Length: 139
Image (cartoon, rainbow, N blue to C red; front, side, top):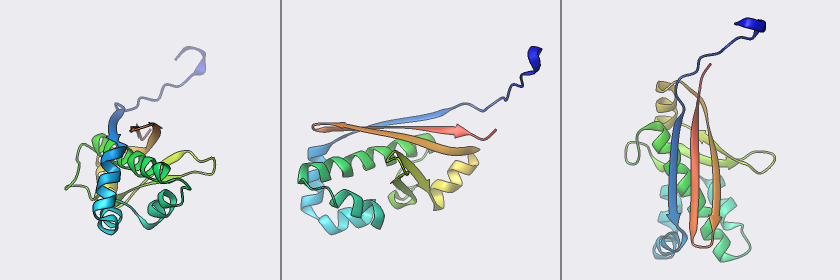
């Protein structure tokens, strides 16, 4: 290329988006709290969500993580039951930004799609939690 710049050809980006209603998450949690947490979240995720001072904030955190996991599943091209909820963990980096940590079937699918990693973003506004995930191809 002119000027000595190299062009790295990447595969296509893979994008997933999901929306979750917070009141629905609250209902599921209140019906069977232990089963809800064990089926959907890692121990660290549950600790983070339950540590919120206000109950409404706890449900927003749970809803945001569910939305993020669903968005990641869309990037991977397979959802539950093909990918267990706990194969995707939504953690936070040092600055508090959400990061997706994959294991098991989710990690296998990420490798099959030749993705280096999956970036996630979560937002909530009142009764709605939204997340987007972008699969970044390996170079």
